[in-house]
Image (tube, rainbow, N blue to C red; front, side, top):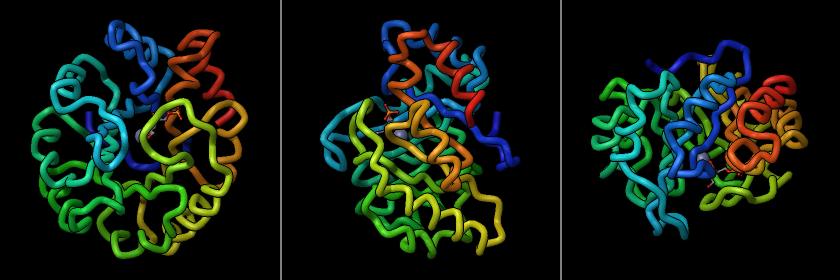
Length: 225
Ligand code: DX5
Ligand code: ZN
């Protein structure tokens, strides 16, 4: 499975950060069967953000077991060190933060040279204009609507100006680039993010923590996005 191009349809990417790791396989199958489009993997190193998650071994264990494209979001200080291990582990898209300490363009080139899709992410208070130097190489922009690090936080409405600005940059570039929004996405905030210009939404707690169950949560999202 390779990463698809934007088609005008909004993609839903459940984040396994909120999954029950004991039942990971079962829950990934549930989101896939209910109509999720990608699987979002939040990689945190305890330095770029104050939290630790998982590495290439978890990515490798999912590859081939799910048909969903693996959408990796690297919240790490030095992403360049992790591109090859995650490529070998089966990533389809790798997104890195503009605020990381590596040379962002060089890391994006490293990802593209391996034949993967690549993206850049910005935190809620980073100026979207900083994405401009990367528009010729990226396949995806990930706009954060929470401070990265944890699932289950509240959507920061101020992040919406970055969604609008990123949509404008994509239009000006004339290229096919996904605009993914991540953080605090639920039934109330998803329509706002889509209205501002998103065509891919990440949802963690609203899917895996849903009282109605995972399948119903995915189906309800698909009705409103
Ligand atoms: C936060 C992560 C998100 C997180 C979203 O740093 O990048 O992908 O899993 O979780 P929710 O949807 O619960 O805000
Ligand atoms: Zn994420």
